[in-house]
Picture 1 (cartoon, helix red, strand yellow):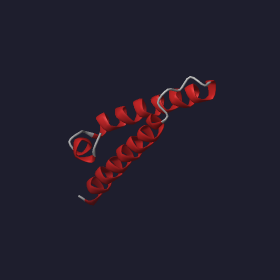
Picture 2 (cartoon, helix red, strand yellow):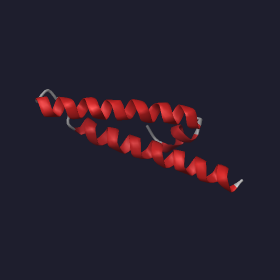
Picture 3 (cartoon, rainbow, N blue to C red):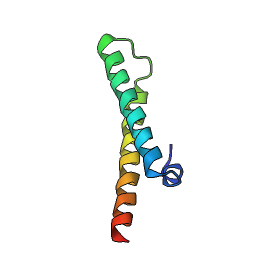
Picture 4 (cartoon, one colour):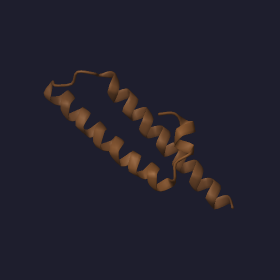
Length: 67
């Protein structure tokens, strides 16, 4: 997921993406705690994707407030 794809989405779609990323992060933490995690790099990717979504949401909110 890159920022260009995220800029094309509406704020509602971004919030839905953020919710799904947070659920995935929770499931990955649970897998790690129980020793079932296979791909440890996925945690880092999910965290960064969530940060990207939050950044784009904040940018959209700031631009809407400026108008």
